[in-house]
Image: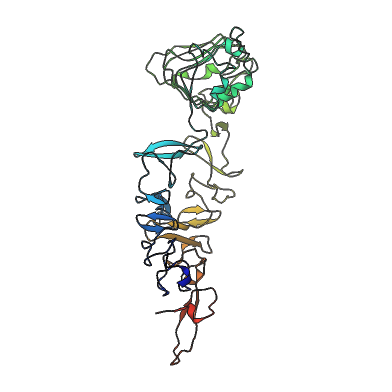
Length: 461
């Protein structure tokens, strides 16, 4: 390259295309240029956006100065190597602002609006596993239990038979360790049915299926629990739907609480449902009844966390007398379903009155730190793209309200004026007097931190 910094004017922080102070390359140029603009670079320092060198590709979200919120950018582009592209290549997926060949382990691939994207998983990422019932896989046992690790959906059924729980000498399969059944805590859905005809004597409920929300019941049955004398309750407190199939619960001599459940509200299918529930006549006499915090809808077992619904309020699946409206930490509000939900962390805790009325940072009664429009913030917006003229910078005033910086500030500010800008290489505005011929005086801007010679001065026109 013929044009290098060795022949550039001192005012040029990077390369140049001539010796004049006005011949500096754009700051986003990496290896010289043929002109001063970002489209004149021979190579880009960061990214190439349709021929222009830019510090970052147009973001997916931009700041709306009217609503004080981040909104979808219709002109968003994605990083594909060092190139900004409006769509990722067909064999890539969108992950944030980049094109990637595969999603990270904590994200799953989804398709939205005709585009494949990586979306953060809620808890474990979905994992479909084969169920039991086949000739070589008739029951859950010690030989196949590890195949259910981290499964969220069972394709088929789950059978728990005596040959699986107690072991099968004929097939040389040892008894199943009850602790191994903990693997089923991640299961949320079973497409066929759950068949329990044997269970470890150490366990008195089916709470290893505490995350199970749906049993589809695609064949004749959906749920069977038979001849398990050690069960005292079902413990299926997350179960919300039985799509189809008959249910049979019988000959469980110590099982209680199941008779309080309104099973018909769980069924969604058109098939005629046969409810054959053996009622434990001594349950009530022995005090095996639902917790007082449960509603009349019934319960899956003892305690306020086993209620089908709550009489008052609930917090994280457990029924409670009240939410932390006026005391306790964190402060809460109650949603339409009576669920106690924590206020936004940027809400300022109030004494003797509610701290918030909803989930958002605009639902706070007062802000703990700063406020941008109606929203409570941990800091004022800094360097956020508005999709128009560039980056938005704001500073907090004495009341903690975020106010816009001067439009010439590029690194933030501490006040509204030009002199309040925070620059990486701060422009020191000075009134300097140099007496050239004719005793002419002029105002100048010093490009360096300290002006030591006239060569570093650019006269203001």
